[in-house]
Amino acid sequence: MNHGQEGICSPLGPRVGAVSVFNPCFIRGCLASLKVLPLAAAIGIAVGSAGTSLAGQAKRRDQPTPAEAAASAAQEAAAAAKDKLTAIKDELADLNKRVQQAKDDVKAAADALRRVESKIEDGQASSSSFGRARDAFRAAEKLHAAAREQALSSPQYKEKYDKAKQSEDPAALATLRKETLAGDATVQAATAKLKAAKGVYEPLRTALLEGDENWTAASEELQSKKQSLKDAEDELHKAIAKERAAVADAKKAAAAAAQATAAANAQQQPGTRHHH
Image (cartoon, rainbow, N blue to C red):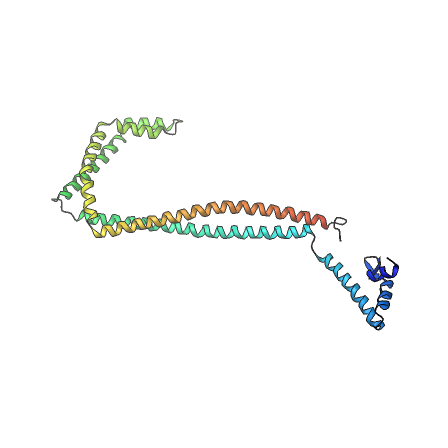
């Protein structure tokens, strides 16, 4: 290839500092090959070609390095992970409120059911079969409670209780209470009477309540509230698991962003970044 051809192919000549100067051979080549054009037009072609090349160099200088691009992507990923975690935490807060409200609803429904049951039971005459069973059961309950109270307030029990409190065995007090009640004849007799009275009372009570439409409605309402509570708790448990995963993801993304940013900053130091 001769010098004239090289000049036409290379619009820029040697670099002066950071800028390439126009190649005179290129301009002469333009004039020679484009004889039909005036001089100004030929120079315009040369200037346009050189300007395009310089713009390309500038564009390449302005583009981020691969390390900078990686850091930017890592930072965006970390921000997205943080936003996701924030959204899950908001969801958890709402679910906690929902669970608490569901618990309050269950308690209110249970109280309402007990009021309905008491009204139905107390409305039965003592002379009825249910009334006699009800009164016998309630009397047995009082007798049983009194027998337990007497056994657990005796001087012998209190002495053993003080010693059990000094024991290193965490189950000492519970064991003492159980053994005391099991070994007391009065308590055992009262327990037997309560069990017998309950055996008569419970079936009659169930039949009475199930035959009352108010009880049926209150019972169904309680079951509905319990189901709502279960659903809310299930969603809460799932959200807690999602939060754990999101926390781990956010930490991982933040660490990756910090590492990528440090690598990009290191290339920004004098002598470490190269322009192509």
